[in-house]
Image (cartoon, rainbow, N blue to C red; front, side):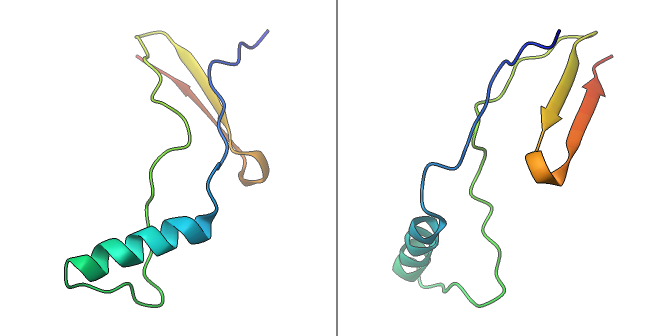
Length: 70
């Protein structure tokens, strides 16, 4: 079987993230413009891997990724 090691979900309203970034940039003399993208980080903690580990990541409607570490 497959062991679930971690799972995550967005726990913060994305509008709150945008407001935070906008305020941060404003405080530093920059602006958030239409079309800019915000990379806000991961929704799960990093997972330690070792050679030979098999890892499958499921992104729901976006698909899945399967990786074997050498």
